[in-house]
Length: 348
Ligand code: HEM
Ligand SMILES: *[C@@H]1O[C@H](CO)[C@@H](O)[C@H](O)[C@H]1NC(C)=O
Ligand SMILES: *[C@@H]1O[C@H](CO)[C@@H](O)[C@H](O)[C@H]1NC(C)=O
Ligand SMILES: *[C@@H]1O[C@H](CO)[C@@H](O)[C@H](O)[C@H]1NC(C)=O
Ligand SMILES: *[C@@H]1O[C@H](CO)[C@@H](O)[C@H](O)[C@H]1NC(C)=O
Image 1 (cartoon, helix red, strand yellow):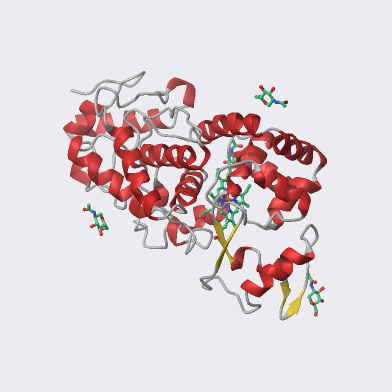
Image 2 (cartoon, rainbow, N blue to C red):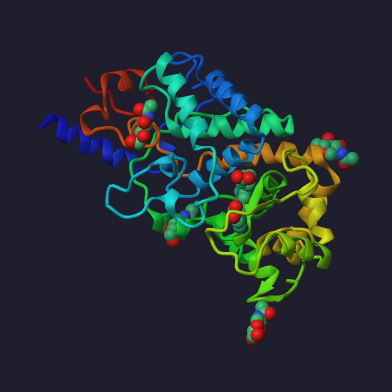
């Protein structure tokens, strides 16, 4: 009875506006798991040494986590309790999303030091930051204290992730829905200075059936190059990729903003930042001043990391990032003792 009533109160609190709930804090694990951030950094550095492209994967993983059900590591779950497909099985994530095994490695080493303490959602946020540090020589502190969710549905990914066919207005609206401004949308799009894309995400810009075409805002020589790489028969399962910033796919610089005016934005959505005058002014600003872009990019990453987060008693600290905790251990004593309380009722 008491447990049930308590669960109901906790549940209700999780639905309250953000202001009355616990907030994220820099150094959240200072007392409970002082090595947490360095263990993530080590896991990311080890993976990066083997495959530098993994950094781009980890940055995108955090983005795709935050835009779907908030930054709650729902993107990592391997099963949908309702029986359908998961977020990670959805077309925008499959087969393109990568870096899962780096998160698993970080989680495994953290579980050895401080069991049941560090959420997978926070590990994702730390790993994205570390990837940005490794590729861009940019460091920023990451407010933490996110809790993990337990729901992962394909449809949520389809409904919330912006597709590469979005117009400027659709991009602005989608980011606004996630509390991010148009400027933050342009800032964060600069992440396309690292990483790769499968052919499926841009094939309709270069082929109409079996006829070569050149989409508006795409240079004809770049289109020809892309066509030589991606067959007209490309489908979602064609496993051919190309760098989004062909010159330096593993360096986080402001080259993305320099490629756009050269008609070398890979996606229709990238080119949309040029078509809209207000957005294009920002593109020019960030192309002209890399320092400014990096500063503001880091701040925008922190803001993205706050989207619809669960804190305090809400959600859980998953023990295995791919799996929701067994019912009995979802509020284990270890976990409760490690939570920094702030405006949340105490339990016995
Ligand atoms: C503005 C709307 C956005 C759209 C439409 C978009 C779309 C895409 C698409 C289609 C891909 C390639 C997927 C594939 O392989 O087929 C991609 C890759 C990528 N995106 Fe975005 N994206 C957007 C915003 C962002 C943001 C906000 C970030 C991070 C802050 C981001 C980071 C990345 C990274 C790093 C990659 C490369 C991933 C890898 O190499 O594994 N994107 N994006
Ligand atoms: C975003 O869109 C969803 C679904 O339409 C809506 O419920 C939610 O309130 C919106 N959030 C913001 C911040 O606009
Ligand atoms: C593709 O080709 C069809 C018929 O060949 C034509 O009607 C259509 O307008 C073309 N689409 C584009 C985007 O060029
Ligand atoms: C670039 O931006 C930085 C930081 O915002 C600023 O301090 C610097 O003066 C700018 N540089 C130029 C050349 O405008
Ligand atoms: C986590 O769960 C997945 C999926 O059930 C499983 O394959 C994996 O071995 C588990 N990892 C650990 C460290 O137990």
